[in-house]
Length: 315
Image (cartoon, rainbow, N blue to C red; front, side, top):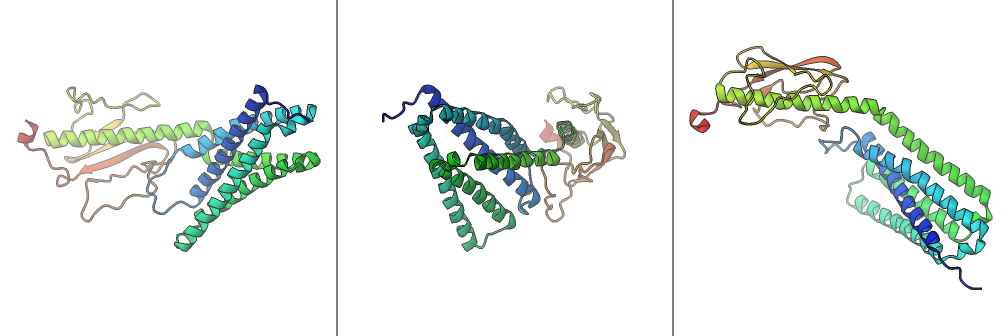
């Protein structure tokens, strides 16, 4: 019997299906890794992505790639059902063998990494969970496509359907969990707006401090602190478009106010504050934690930490 010829349609269907499949698997693993990182944060990490960019990208990838994978594989199976000889296409066998090889290599690499960390005494809960996730996902892919190579799913179509539905439900549950963690897109936008407000207030604060160092007095208004030559323009509230509230409360003290949508820790990228060195002060009250609603931040400049500029320096 002559070997079946691979048409451009066959080649690109299999190529597209494999690319979509690999992308789906990688995104699924990345999403579970992100969940593990959030559940078991690394005590050595001071900064994280406050808007869960990794979770959002993995979710978006799964939402697009999983349906693409399903549709392409359905086209392929329909072709094979009409022309059974297409099950012998070299592109099919290469795709299946390559997938089995990659999954097997991932399993071996995962075990080597686990043993290496174990011998180094560096095992942590989140590392072990990631190893388990990789073992389960890579193992499932390995066994599924090995069975496909041996014709198991062709001989047991009902089991193939059951496995496909179960895999789809697992992926759907993983995506749904992301929405519980992230909240709605509208809530994420509110958090981003609050983050921008904190950033704006930080910039305004340092402009006020710089003004004090130059003039040895606080500006009565933000308008007074403008520096046309420097080109700095004081930001306004990104939601209302109104200027931020500023008020002098003493010779070295002032306060900045804004309206926030949600409670926040201040610097959204910081997991916990970094301890200051012995005797370090800077600006008293330099914390940006806030509740929802109108919030004011009281600030007092420490002249020893931020001494006035000498006149010769300014010339």
